[in-house]
Image 1: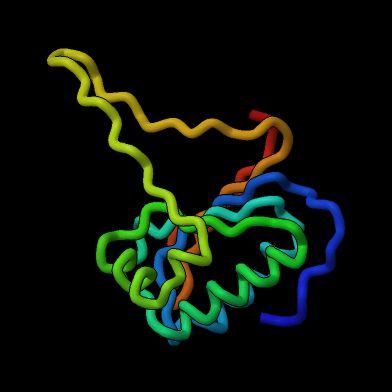
Image 2 (image 1 turned 120 degrees about the vertical axis):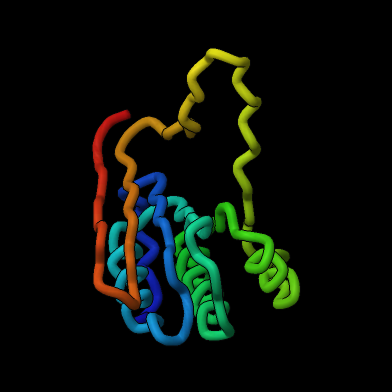
Length: 149
């Protein structure tokens, strides 16, 4: 990743990114994605780690750098839904003391005969962004959503 983020007003209150791979092999690509993300000047970045199965020391360094750059711009980095193995790595490295880590609470089970409801998240008013980014492999899905909720 390149230099610090300028401390201009945020243009997006929330950007969510689903991370599928985060290790040394994909560090250059992930760094490029995060640089582009920071150019949007988000108020909060949520990295969804539910599809990520492994992180290494290089990824921990990248997350710390991303956190530092966002903090300088008065923005927040949140890690969402890490699996138990990744959560343990975050505890061992004390990253859980530095970053906000959240997990979605399980939805109550529907009664018999009721179709299951898709989980919903409250979206902030105004512009928002959501992306699924595959790095380290041939991209299969790369989407960005912007609009009014």
